[in-house]
Length: 115
Image 1 (spheres, one colour):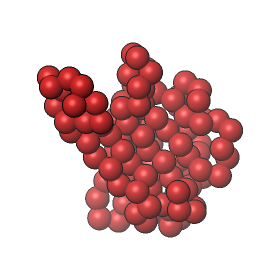
Image 2: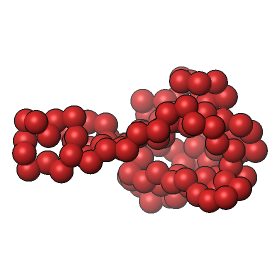
Image 3: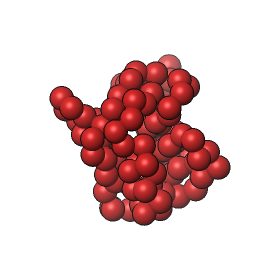
Image 4: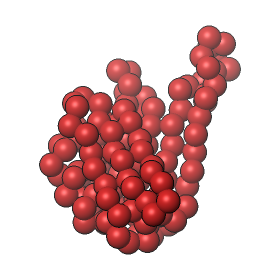
């Protein structure tokens, strides 16, 4: 994965706009490892292969932690703390946020096909 280049991601968001897409959105604060450290708050969010269509999408330009917002017909989806993207996958938009230890904290993926 590469560090996010907001111009590239904005173009990819625009290219997927106004289409039925599958979304994967995941966030964890260490819920998978809370059994090893009781001080960790075991919070997590996970949604996968839900259909979404957005009319407007944008990425904030506040490096190193970016936010992507997607405006749908009835509301918004946003993900914050994104740091990297998968540059080799041109069919899907795969974004991730890693902490200072390289652990995955947040992921946002959009695809025309289920994941």
